[in-house]
Amino acid sequence: MKPSEKRILEVKKLTMDFGGLRAINSLDLDICDKEIAALIGPNGAGKTTFFNCITGIYKPTSGDVIIHKNGNTERINGVKPNLITKKGFARTFQNIRLFGNMTVLENVMIGRHCRSKSSVAGAIFRHKSNRQEEKDIVNFSYDILKKIGLEASVNELANNLPYGDQRRLEIARALATEPFLLLLDEPAAGMNPNETASLTDLIIRIRDEEGISILLIEHDMKLVMKLSERIFVVDYGKKIAQGTPEEIKSNPNVIKAYLGEETNA
Ligand SMILES: Nc1ncnc2c1ncn2[C@@H]1O[C@H](COP(=O)(O)OP(=O)(O)OP(=O)(O)O)[C@@H](O)[C@H]1O
Ligand SMILES: [Mg+2]
Image 1 (cartoon, rainbow, N blue to C red):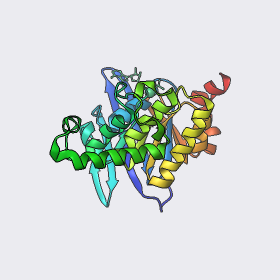
Image 2: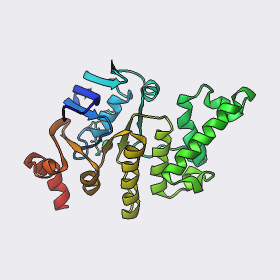
Image 3: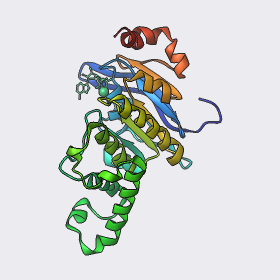
Image 4: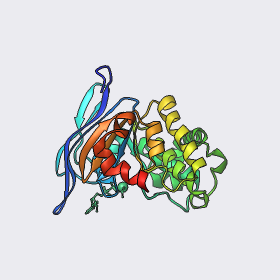
């Protein structure tokens, strides 16, 4: 990290045990303001577990998860996922988790409800008192879908979208929570090359236009090398390297643990 850069997330010595299995082993990682960073490593290395630990799905066995925001510092270990969302973390999941029988717009509106006073039930049954807030949520959600390029599909059922669009919709729903940090778990998985190219542009735009920091887990090395300012590499739950794409490409430990597998594939 350059001294001039502001850290927004600081994870120190994070450890997560599942019974006898140490899925994350004393991992240090930090994210700077408006940075695009990647977390890579072989299957089962602990990447998704890391996301689950910092978003409150799992309470880490030990270590610190610290956020720095508006001059305040807060340790958020064990804080529940809905509160972590309110604090400004948003994520997508390795296995798409959309409401398939709801429309594209409704999926984004659900994301938005974490920042509104009315409940999701209130929105669905449309209580009178909630109507203005509902209108605002619809407009806000529609604007996000425009930015993401899904405005033509607002009334489609999420299940009927092409796969690449479903992944983009997950990002739209995450953005509806107005995060300062966006965590993407394998956003390009299953995408064709055209979809991956447009995802790459989208991620850059989210950072440049919205000022949101991004940490992505990804197996597509071309995408990782193109997008990331810094890369963290894990293997068996341990960080084995961190650095710029150039540094990572030439790191012998990384080649042995991970990139070697890919290039030989
Ligand atoms: N809830 C759980 N209970 C027990 N073991 C778990 C649990 N979640 C993850 N693990 C184990 O922790 C290790 C890390 O899993 P994780 O899903 O974090 O890997 P990953 O790096 O995301 O892999 P992939 O690239 O395949 O998605 C694996 O050995 C996995 O089986
Ligand atoms: Mg995973």
